[in-house]
Every structure is written in structure tokens, then in C-alpha cells.
Length: 224
Image 1 (cartoon, rainbow, N blue to C red):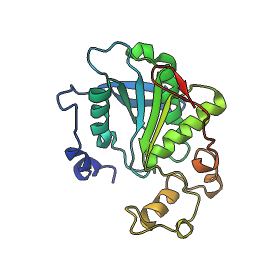
Image 2: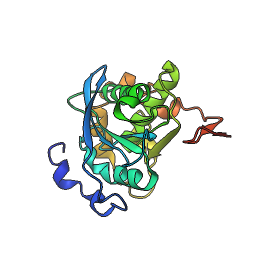
Image 3: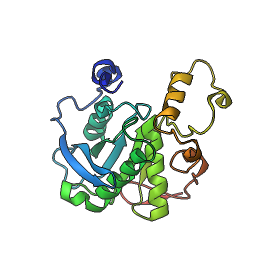
Image 4: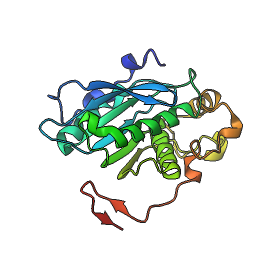
């Protein structure tokens, strides 16, 4: 799946709504507790110190293909004038939980603290992801909250995988889910192989989420 992803994952080809004329992203290597992590960075032209969105791609924790979500990065840069850091985190079975979630946190914390080195405003940082990336983004925010490392202005979780601890038969899926028992069991056998750790906050993120009382806008104002 890892090697074939660039050849088989095609859904983004028809989703380039804006940003077709943007140059290719630059590459940075961000230090984390699990080694350096490569990230693609897109910066809106003509905007100094733009706010930044840190994105974690999907792929069931086992597919390593951050370019699958580049359509979103191009759209956000072109339509919203924000920068996007697309994180190429490590996946299973080469690594297991919690490597990817800790890398996600460390990248976001680094961008928040040292974004100025990349021409970004790290104090205006959002984080999010799709599917498995949604899990990693939620886990990164929980760790940031507990360690007071950074405060995201916004969190975007697209069809997030928030609870792998629950058995598939207990989930009671409605209709014909896109990802069935096979992928669910594969994730548990690779990324979350240790059953005792599946209920940890960074794995089962639904068990540790507290609704915020306030939301910050990009400009810094607060609303309830």
C-alpha cells in the first residue's frame, strides 16, 4: 500500500479548485523526538508572516503519501492566504503508536515556536487532518494542552478516526462504510498492536476531548 499509493490514490486530481498556478512546495526537515520529519511548505505569495495550518494526511496510519491532500494545501494557500505545512510522518508497520502522534505534536510545536524562521506566524497556527490524520491532529492538540507547548487557533478534523480501541462489531456501522473490518483490523495489528495502549488519550482521542469555551479567530479576537 505504501509503494502503490502514488499510483493508486487519484481522488485529489479533480479537486484542485484553486491554486493550480502555485509553485511546488518547499521542503523542510523538522526535528522531533523520533528523528527529523520532512514537511512540504506552501506559502502564499506576497503575504508576509501568514498564519499557518499544519496538516496530517490520511491513510489508515499505514499509507505514507502526503501529496494525496495537496489539493487542500493549494486551495487554502490560494483562497485564504494562509501557509500550509504538510507533514510526512512515519507510518506502520515500520513504526507503531505513539510515534506518528508524537511527531505530529512536535512538528506543530516547532512551527508554533520557530515559525518566524520559515517566514510564518507561528502564533496563529491551526492543525488538522483527514481520517488517520484527524486522529493525529486531535492527539497533538491533547498533548499540547497537557504540556502547554502551543495553543492552536483552530482544529480541523475531517472524517477522523478517533477510536480504534472499540471492536469493529461494537461500532455498529451504518450502511456500507468505505473502510470495513479489514482496514480496522489491519490498523490494530500494525499501528495500534498493543491492546493495552488503545485506550490512551492519544489513541482513543474521543475519551479525552473537552469542548472549548472560547474560539480564537485568525486575527486574535475571541468569541464564545
